[in-house]
Image (cartoon, rainbow over all chains, first blue to last red; front, side):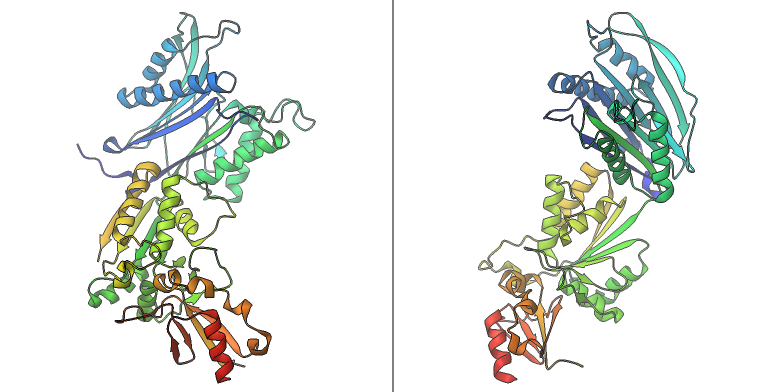
Length: 399
Length: 82
């Protein structure tokens, strides 16, 4: 079976941010997402286990993993929800289920189905306002045969829509404080999200989820009184990124390299001194090395008109690969050239690598104090990471 | 007014790992007596490591290409030729 890749017209960015309850090393909120490439489907589950800590963590993990797998195998998420409800244990003291969940299933036509049980409602934003999806209530039986209500809804997503899922750590943040005696509240959360989007219409799922979690944390006077989790799904025009690294094997192709950079519709990174020199020579644009902006252990970045980032080659790419592999959280202060590459990659949906295969013989000298890997192997590794861990679409072109 | 010496430090991979890294801060380390005469810039790659028997790191001082360059060698060279 073949499906046209979603990224050709609409890209789906999924990201989440989480802060665990104070002094807890394990959280009771779990956010999981999965892309089924063969079906062009994207699934996401947010589950909140009762309380916080280990027991809550186990139950939330159980629920979210079940959610993902059932949704993946059934077409109907309501069916998946039913199976989960029949399995979930019930707290004998409080007579409530041990975990709550919200599940989102997006198919290849961007048709969205949402099932919710007891979590704060999933917010959907379109054109600067919160969209009402007319939730239908359905009764399902709990493990103890008690009927409970789940909410089922659906809509057709358009470019620019966002689906925002959060745990009660967000909506109840600030509870008991002078400013928010009854907590932040769904409506105020909604308004905060709309304000954020209004001030930055293209805000990524990554940034929006972080903004919401940070604000909840702030509401509690810089504390997480409960686990705070927010997941965001953003339907957007695919953002394209070109990463050009290495001189072409055949010197006749230098011109082609320059025209590739010129004509590319999207952001551009040039990795490699020789590569930058070739492009500079062919386009007549000067490369300026930023000696005023040094990092301890990577060669400095450069500036050139027409490129969003110019860096050294293999050392910087190697660093980027390491960040991706370790899943390093790159904050505002980590801005060495390697981190900058990763940030640009994660902010894009389609990443095209153009890899020159000419080898600098000096790099292969065994007397070099550091081992320099072969460029195309590192790029292969990065591309695999981006596809599997970050759901990006990548292409590699060797010249 | 252009300065008397223009020093280009190669920041390509080979030069960087073979000692060029220590030279990136050259501008801040120039002694007071020559500071005003020297302009320090970076080069993304001087393309000299491709040549046979190359001895990186390279620094280009006006037209003179210095092999196996180091901070002291550059400063000595400038003092001699000023």
